[in-house]
Image 1 (cartoon, rainbow, N blue to C red):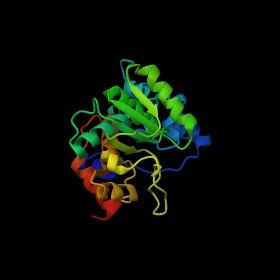
Image 2 (image 1 turned 45 degrees about the vertical axis):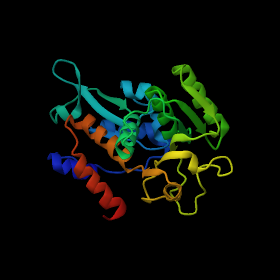
Image 3 (image 1 turned 90 degrees about the horizontal axis):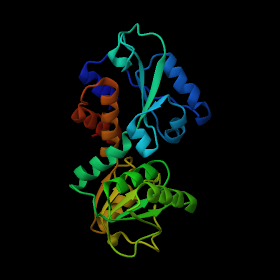
Image 4 (image 1 turned 90 degrees about the vertical axis):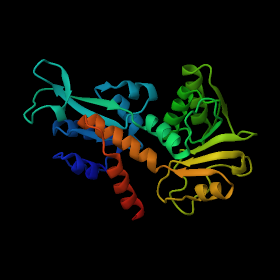
Length: 278
């Protein structure tokens, strides 16, 4: 999606994928900085590690406690930090790595558009997964003022840690660990379960039924219909996968790097073609 957008914007850039072991993440960031990359995207498990490896944090990364986008900057003639994209090729001197988070806003925008949920305030939410993307989603939902927030995670300590953080930062937020006994407006799968056809469900079917949910959102976007989404539709729920979240976090990152609005229609078309062959 990025290369399609870069072409549409007429930028002389190229978006490439690199594998970096977590033990080498700091060296990878420093290497990209030394080679004057415009920026980076980070995926799991790098988003939390990078908090301590960038030179500065944007308010978005500070608020949600994860970095998925890095922009490299240098000083202009007046000594002010500017994105490398705005500086001439011969920009020299110290380069700064600034961390951003575009995931939090992307999940809310995706939910509002895919489900026409204009307001999350007051909604009952079951969040499956409390690490990485789940943690960011939980904090963002609390910031949006959801009603009851239920946290379920494979390891209890992660759910407890997220609940404690939410209570500390959003004292008025009602947050519980475990499954709801009544109906909820929204179920979010923030785990990786569903990527493989033989994965078990991301929730305990003995403790929760999809008939208790109105909407089900699976952050997994490949396959297009996971077993969770198939079961959700069979139970009468509105259901959507994580394609829109992927799109919107990427579009926001491109704008951070380039300073230009991202061509989202071009990016969505490229995503759907690449992921689903449509």
